[in-house]
Image (cartoon, rainbow, N blue to C red; front, side, top):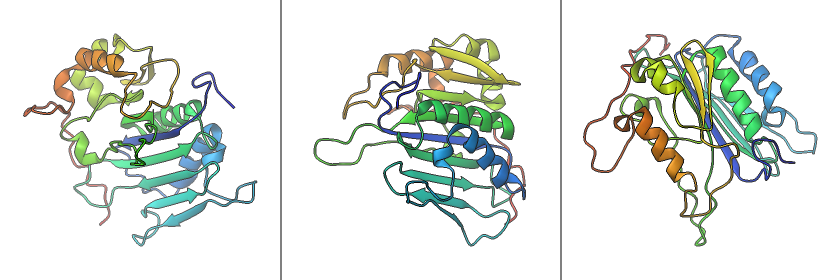
Length: 247
């Protein structure tokens, strides 16, 4: 079933949220999964109505600060992970979600990322779709972010992005608010949602139908924020370690 964001509803949708909240509180999983249930109930860990199952696993780092991983098989395949701050030198905790369209379409992913970003004070977040598989069977290329990336540069402009206070302070609120994107919405104090186009469609292998929009928004926000071959200097927010990690 399509949505007003993606009438086709195909492909594997991906999202990440980077927050200064350490995500180590005892109520963090319940809060996070409540947000996920409001927007993408098919992506929440737990039994599936079609007889399949989703698994919720914690790492050996222990409670309540352990990583959470969950995965369900197709149809409606889901992979999710919550990566809290472990060490005092950590700058961000991360939430990662990857869903087939049968589990969560782009509207659901957008709703989850926007609410999670405001609830947990995110510095950055995004929603996009994996490219179609290549004809030679090679898996599609896609860059997942790490907190270390944020300290150096952003790899690209994603279809939908949250720019939180650190980026809005660096770029300027007026510049962010006037970005040449299809949607620019303030979703919290010094936090904006940017969306390149109305619909999110899976790009064919080797093609980027959003290339022009990505270039225009990157140029408006500041080219030096983004990685580019041959570029030796970049601009990024100064993310101080919070000391919140418990390891």
